[in-house]
Image (cartoon, rainbow, N blue to C red; front, side, top):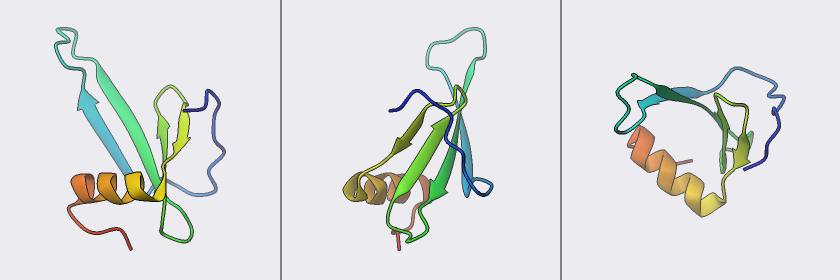
Length: 72
């Protein structure tokens, strides 16, 4: 995961928020997710501006878990 802000050309395709496990302060982790232009990869930016482009296999698995559909 890179430690820089990724300049995305369009709004995120999906946004997710998850509560931190065991946090009594109600902290939330936010993620913005983009499909690559070819629709084969996922790119994720966290609320702390960390960026990652997943491998094709990881993209397929995560997309199916989060969206309940096959990627592509």
